[in-house]
Amino acid sequence: MKKFFSFFILLFSLIIFPLDIYGQEEFLGEIIYVDENKIVINNRFFKLNQNVDVIYKNQLGTQLISAEDIPLGVFGVAYLEDMTIKALEVSGRDYNTEKIIIKEILKIPEYIDKFHLSYDEKYLAYYSQEESQLIVKELATENIIWQKEVPISPAFSFNPQAYEIIFTFIDEDFYGLASYNLLNNCEKFLIREPISNNEFINYFEIAPNGEYIVFTTLSGLTDSQGYVSNIHLIDKKGYTLLVLNISNVYFISWSPDSSALAFSKYEEPNLETSQIGYYHLETNNCVLLEKEKHINQFNPAFYKDSNKLIFTHSENFIDKTVLYDLTSHQKVELFKDYNYISNFCWLDDKTLIYTYGDLPQIKIINLETKNTLKISEGYYPQVRNNILYFLKNDLTGNTYLYSYKTK
Image 1 (cartoon, rainbow, N blue to C red):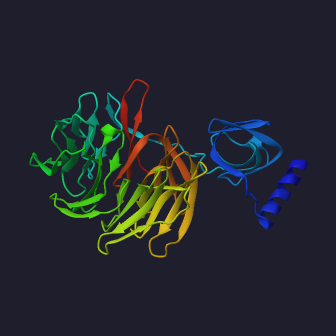
Image 2: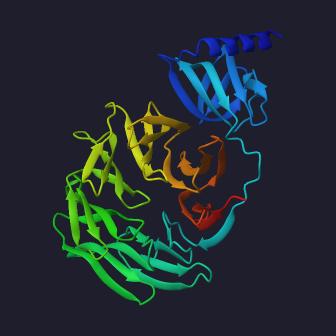
Image 3: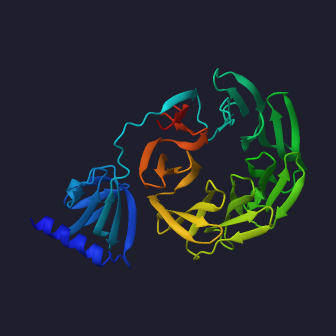
């Protein structure tokens, strides 16, 4: 009876006087152990305040008022003072009530860190570290239809509008971008530049319309002073269209209509924090989002309508996903998670996919209902025709390509 009375007093106070967490540390994560004295969140032990109050509402609407009643595997936000939990709010949205069915598509007998699917899902590209080969397979038959020796692990991607794979290369004298057409077996250089100061292309992205490519370069690594170049924009034939005077860029994404770029850049002089910016091709307008110095912003991705950005806002070890309106310049917090939210992609118009955690794991969230669903451990998610594809490893060094789709 005393616990119930305390619970309703807490609920009443939260309605009239919202929980005052000013000055307290906020820690969010997966709850993996609970008893009357301590709680383990993300493998970190915290003491429980003797009268800790818990508000938990699961998908069935059940309310809990004792920490001992919390199901393991759900996520909680703990408000801490001197490593003691003063209040704990727990959400049941991460607790799957349905069986998740993922389908194994392909087994690769080595570890690979990335892959790329053609946009009609016919072909798979990956880099074999063991063979130093960039390989393209027909997904249905698993037959290799093209492979090329590339001594240094390349960046690579299929052209969204053609049966063409584009990849980086570097040899003793030159570096650049090359392409291979799967239909006519034609290989050609898009960019071929003489190497100076160990320079090479470290990152590129192809526009959804297939007409443009952006890339950055890295140089000077032999002196342990790596330098990321400005953003270069070329057309599909390799002709330079412009160079943006934005240095220290390490991530770029295109808008769905190919009209704009979003990017993350390290802030100078110490390069310890990062900032989000965007650039419109037609207006030649480049904007850096304002932020406080200690905050990190990264992983920008455009919303489906190309007029909004989603990105990760990291502060005090808590990652928040923020929606930024490019017209009104308003920011709205969408959701929180822990330990590096990354790899945003869209399953459909309202369902966002992302990875989180050290394993990592893949999760989807419905941005209308805010319901979340853990899909699997895995990494490097991609979506083709409303189907999610991702990679997983086993303990013997194999990599598996899996797929998931909604019913």
